[in-house]
Image (cartoon, rainbow, N blue to C red):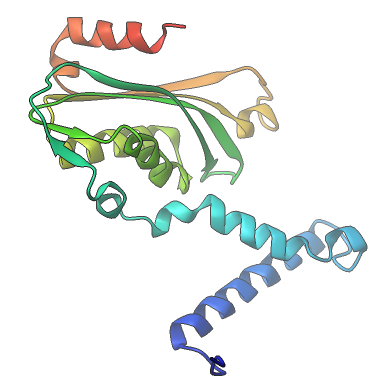
Length: 201
């Protein structure tokens, strides 16, 4: 079947937006003193456009849709931990990457979530322009809202290239953030168990 010319207004808008972003990238390269017509840079605006849209694809994701169909009623009430979740995000201040590991735990109250959905939840919020502190809170609060467990804990450990490549230029500095909700906040023993589990080798 032959595709009609023109397409929908939504499709036209998307094409126009992508074209605008490519033009912005061309202008940026020119401002930096580059020749956008040289062989190595001819396709760079297209590649950067595609890359940025992938790296910020979390804006298009809905948490409820991502987790849909993966919540189960179950009487299990012990701590569930998914640790060492690799993530990559973009610092909203300099648009440079920060990356590392995210550790997530919750204590169920009659409802479990499929384990593979927890890394997907991390990806929803990491694939955006972010600050590490906000991302940590968003992951924890989303899990708390959807599952309504007895507690949620999230720890994020990351290297920020805006610290390593520029500014203070400290290549081995890790930033650690945490959000503790419910029993993880109230019960020191629960907190200590979580911290012990995520740091086991």
